[in-house]
Every structure is written in structure tokens, then in C-alpha cells.
Length: 281
Image (cartoon, rainbow, N blue to C red; front, side, top):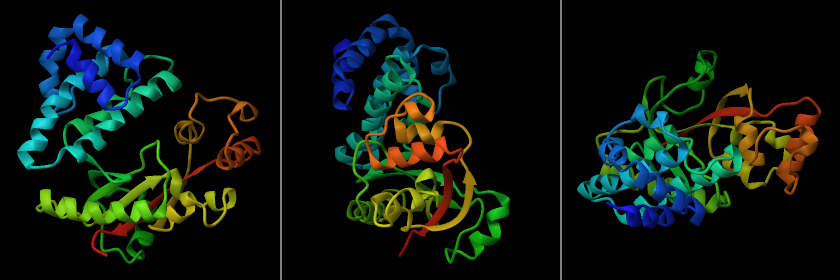
């Protein structure tokens, strides 16, 4: 592997040219480190990367994709799913630049799931191997949800990557494709349900947006069984795509952003909803 390989991988997964060149330069500078840890990153989380600057993290992650691809091939999983899954590297390298003010990759812990085949992007949505969790106070509501699942069961944790519209038809296609994918390639896993823990399911969204808005239609695809207040900036960051700022300084170029900014300005907060959806429906 050399500098050109890193450039090609960076561009393949959606990194901009400046970020691609920075990653290639970092690979040249830290070639020994990257060659040592790239194979390991395709198997498990490597804390050593967290001690490196973002450009080196990105270089090592890009090098690791070669080894992750081999694991895909061993399982017979096609290149389309591989490219779609690893495109998150480009998204998070962009977030590093826009939100963190650095070039490279800050959020390696998240991308480690992609590299180690713990997460796959199937159509519009991402699916992560996980065990069901929720606030203990929500267990009675979970039992009443009608979905046969209990705390600690194997589930598929659903994530919504940035960059595409959340259209209902594409989401339904994704669920159907995910059932076929996991039944074919991981038949022994036995997911009990699809699960999501996200601001997208916050009931407050029903007040911020029309009932037929894509976000609200998506939320209704799940049975909501728990809600908690969002504390901190993480969820709002996904709406405003910037560092924390006073409500009147936040971008308000969409109806969601305008409504969320008004909510925050009035002392309100976003919510996170916990939802389940049967795996076999």
C-alpha cells in the first residue's frame, strides 16, 4: 500500500480533495504505524488510533478498508454494500472539517463499527449488530409494544446517515433489503427486531413539522416506547451541522432548522425516542 492507494480510497468513499491529500501525506509520514494497525482495525477497535491526530486516524482507517474488504469477500458480500457502508468515512471526514475545524477523522470510534463488520448500510439506512437497551423505567411500555423483545436480546440498531432524503419508500425498501441481507449472510444472528434510539423519534418533532413530513413518517414506522430529554449538543448538531451557538445565530435555511431554533430559543429541548419494529413483518 502506498500514498496513491490512500488517495484513491479517500476519493472512493467521498472525501474532498484537500482531505484526501492530507490523509495521503499522513500515511507517508506515519507509514509504519498505519501498516501495523490497519489490519488490526479491520478486526477490532484499536485505542492506539485515538492517540493520533485526525489526519493519521483517517489514513489508518482508509488503509484498514483494504482488509475489511477481504472479509466482505470471504463472506460473499458484494462491493455495492461495501462502498455504501464505507461512504460514511467521507461523511465523517467532512464533519471533522466543518464541525471540529480539523482535517481528517475525529470520530474513529464510530467508523470502527464499519471496519469490523459490525455495521452495514443497506439502501437508505444503516444496521448495527447490538443488544437491546433502554431506560429501566421503560420496560413495562416495551412489553406493551407488541414486539416480542426483551432487554439484552440481539437486535439491529438502525441509524440514519447524513446526505440523503429520508423518503418513506426508500426506508421501506431498506428494511426489506436488510431482512434479506442478514438472513443470507448472518443467518445465525437471529435479530429479534429493528431498534432505534434517536432524536428523529422525539414526539416534539410532531409539533415542529407537519404530520406528513418525512421525519414524522419515519418515526411512525416504529413503535415508540420511551422518550428522554436531549441533554447536550450532539442531537442538535445533527440538525444544524455546526458547532454550538446561540439560537439566533444558528442556520435557519430549512423549516426544521427554523422550528428547532425557535424551540431552543424558547427554552425547550429536543427529545430522543426509543422505538422498535418487528424484524419479520
